[in-house]
Image 1 (cartoon, rainbow, N blue to C red):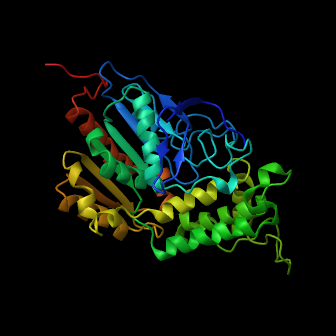
Image 2 (image 1 turned 135 degrees about the vertical axis):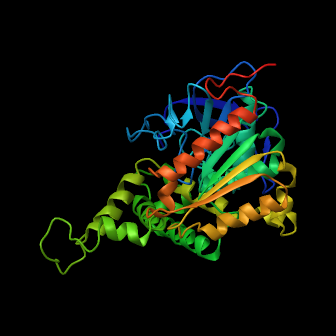
Length: 386
């Protein structure tokens, strides 16, 4: 697997990382990217958490695909998250495949790739690694943490596990735990991968062929959940793909079929099948309230000082507004100051990645206020001193 370019840190060399499962890992390598400059008192740091198939290349060219960063629209010099003012960090999550320890990497005990002998991880395990990376970078407290989808799940784990290290937090299009439907879609994807004969019980690293067909189907299935019916209809309808009539066969007659096949075939070039299994499992296991006798508000009691923002989208049926409101209600019950908006958008779950002016407007105000209340000059990102 291509580890990608960019920065890398080796963590947990002296004290192993203890996972929620009870297993330990040592050391842990983390691939990450930084943008901007950390100010003198390390008070202008922003941590961005990526979604399931995302990576650390939030605002820089992806080393495998050559495409721009997945949130380059919002992150960079003079942009909403202004890297002339703020020091932005984004790391590849534990279990992923762009430079961070995961099933694709060599198990030091065997000299072979971990495969499915890699320990099962949780979203909180990912956050433990992020917290150690933040330590490594000399940052004690984050001005802001922000994430959408699985990134928003990581933000919630920060709020309950490391609230003292946060000044403000943004959660976009997310949920505090998966529904049965969410788990069901992930299971279809996992089974598609494991049904591919090239999966080899997760030991395909030792062979020439990878389970690309299974991983492509998993991606196709998941991609449907990221869009809305209106978005699919507006973009494709029942339009045919480069033909005037149906072929009475099983080629990609319809444009939407061709689109999904393309999404699947390009995904396998940049992602690892076992990583997909592990990360989807981590998302399914997320249930923050379960660690607090089922009371989500209790999970956030230590975060009463953290300024929060939650945004949902009307056409998101993967993590609909009702799931985002569960977070808002729990934060309110815990005494955490929180702003909330449900934004009208036809784009489905992927809206948080796209050009949505209402989201930009709300985030602009929140980021500016977060900088000011964190003692920063919102024009420069430098600390204000009496």
